[in-house]
Length: 113
Length: 111
Image 1: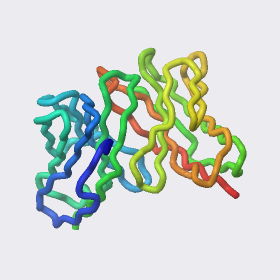
Image 2 (image 1 turned 90 degrees about the vertical axis):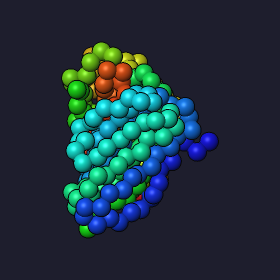
Image 3 (image 1 turned 45 degrees about the vertical axis):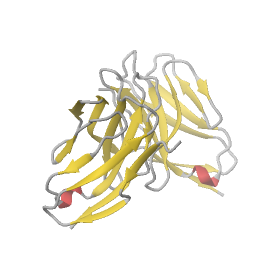
Image 4 (image 1 turned 90 degrees about the horizontal axis):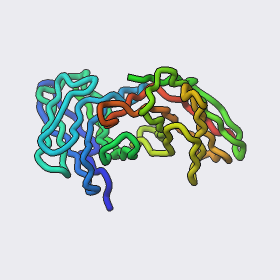
């Protein structure tokens, strides 16, 4: 049971480049989400999905796109990378309902130069 | 959305109980309180959660006040490996699908 798997773990981008952070879960979870964490701060929600084909914006969605074509995968796309997007990105998943545990991936470290 | 307030840092002697407080005075009746911890910048690790009753598992105990405006996470016998940032989080959203994180409490367990 792999849980929540994120790739890549580390990435360096140049300003203006685009890329996709991959997230996959093998627990048949309906809910998936992406958070970012800046130094010394808690995690902030970027986008989330409550099921295949359904996505919505979180607290800090600008500069990011998501799609959910399957239950297992929830990729995060950076359209035109900016230095302000330098951060650690975490993917998370859970079953529906407020009493179900949310599981986090190990993170993807992104540096934009 | 409910928000939480935690002290920025705490120290605890190894082997003693660590009691981490959290205020969530605006919590709604159906919002759960979750505790996670993060060691360095690894992915947040689930510890425990509850709605209104006290909860205990193999890692910790969660004490929620009767009015649900605050809670305390108890690590009964802290070890050096418990040094981490601890987040008290209220699960929000129409279906409780999201977390609102604060800056957390940095717990240092001292030898």
